[in-house]
Image 1 (cartoon, one colour):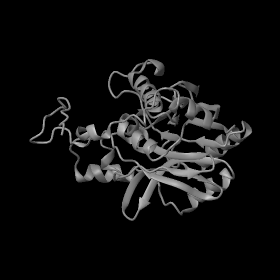
Image 2 (cartoon, one colour):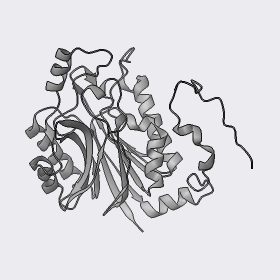
Image 3 (spheres, one colour):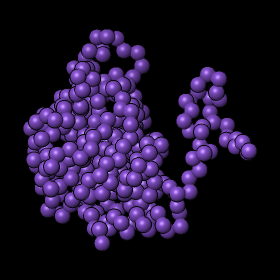
Image 4 (cartoon, one colour):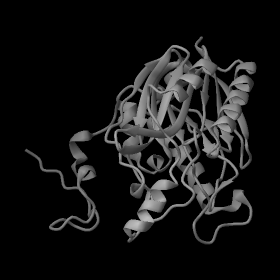
Length: 307
């Protein structure tokens, strides 16, 4: 038996760091009271997310205003993450923040415990003008923790199957997907559960879990920030695509217990060998740029040359 209790949050975080610490502390206490060994917090939970998503042409003045509105820029060895690590103790905690690297800023995530940082990640895929504020990361790498081998993603990353697959191929048993995922930009539904971006969020979570046969843990922001309204929908998904626990479209903490070795073996050795049965020698078009001059605008099918 390798029972692992996991908690994941849909919670509201803004710019005030002391409020962020109090919220994190409350979530840690609740997760610990439930026997959790892993707690996954949202994207940008130390200092909040961006107040809006831009894009298109932007003047230097507008860019300067946008950069002034960024959350506080923190470093991996700074006092802010040490504060959270001290609160975490023997609990493994994954959380998002704005990382400073010299003059550059990254939308980042870290997994830590009282022993320090276990893994870090910088968001690779940038939606809707996020590149106006942050540099992009460039790698997916799994890492070992006391609760299993893990990988991290942030928000829009979940829309790219290749991202989760890269982590699964690097041995990830658990993938944490941290988000500040809002409602649709146009035609948003009055009820969060009816919003098409809520439905998209939920579809991606289940698809990424089942196609990679991993335990998928998706956190999200809650409430509103600036012009954004978040869809909550934090959840834990088993490697068969089954939702084990969810907050639904409310703020809260979802918790589930899994026998990690058992559920992974059941999925991976139960007749569908998604990772084993891949045909990577046929997937050349997956790495082609979309719409590159001299190539088709869209994939037109795969031609296999036989020797």
